[in-house]
Each structure stands twice: as C-alpha cells, then as structure tokens.
Image 1 (cartoon, helix red, strand yellow):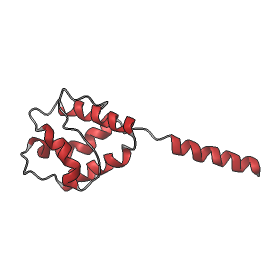
Image 2: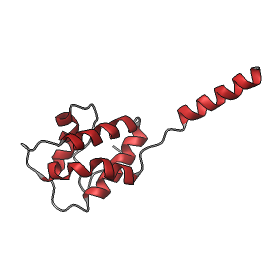
Image 3: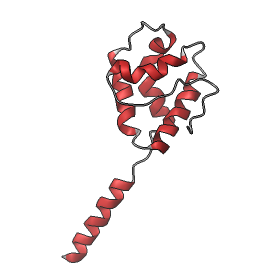
Image 4: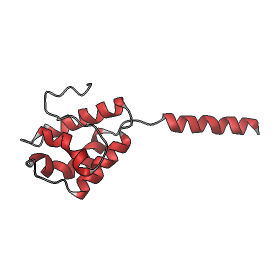
Length: 113
C-alpha cells in the first residue's frame, strides 16, 4: 500500500512540474484574432475572440521563461503581418481586462527583459 501511495505522489509531482510554455503554433493561433486590433489605432478595440486568446496565453505563461517564449513567438508572428502598432501589443491585456505584462513588441524587442 505504501508503494502505491509513493508511486501516486511521484506521478502528482511529475504532472505539476511537467508544465511548459505554449508552442509557437499555439501562440499564433491564440493571437490570430488580434491582428485587426494591433494594426489599428489607439481607439481600436480587441474582439472577444482576441481577448479569449490573450487570456489563454496569460494562463499558460506562468513564469519568466514562459513569458519569454510567448514574446519570442509573438515577435516572429508579428514580423509577418506588415505594418502594425507595437504599443497595441502592450495595450492588449489591459483592454481585455487581463493581468499580463506584454512589452510593445517590434523587431528590436529583447524578450529576455
């Protein structure tokens, strides 16, 4: 019986520590509905689908390494959409009512900071 309890405890610990940052394809999928917002002006409003994606990212970006990975993926994805307003990236969480710190991402952004 004690072996079973020990085994279950190990499984529980593994499931807790097995967390990893969302993949780039996942990040891109989550923020795809936000393209119109980031290409718009300061008075633009993010869609419900955009905010849903940002919320999903905030849940999965649990630590500094995860946030760095998300930033790098966003930087890569944004490089493909043409002209956009980098400050709209940092405004997204607030406009969606979500607690997530995103920098104004452009090609020169250092995601490690």
